[in-house]
Image (cartoon, rainbow, N blue to C red; front, side, top):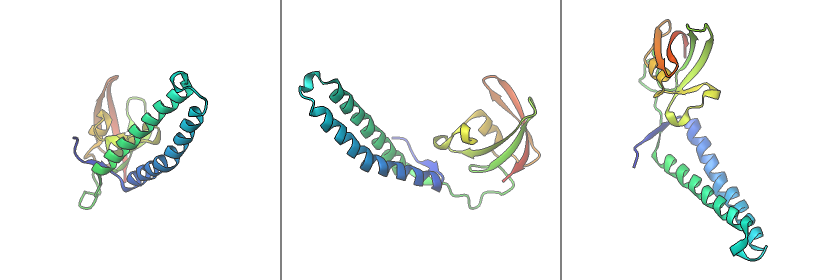
Length: 156
């Protein structure tokens, strides 16, 4: 069994809300769909019933995975971490020296990573290269497409 998963308090609350919704509304609507499909007669040749039962299995699997994740979740404690160095939950503005574009990233655990929201995993090549940096530092990240140089413009 995997160990602890470090998440922000906000992410834990999001997951708890999602789990609650799946358990109440998700299960209720799934039961209604199965009952509706069952009312259509012979279950041995009822594709709608089979599909609803399969969806029910997927719903229960998702609920189980969320319950497992939340049971292993630990809130990230930032007390005692240096304010002038990048660490998990730091927000950095960096300039890609290869293409001169500026990006803002938040360093997060792999479970919270979402590049569309600017959240990059501390285990990704870019995330690893930014851990421990200070404003003004220049670092390199080895990515599948080559090496990217970043200058850290700001750190929060």
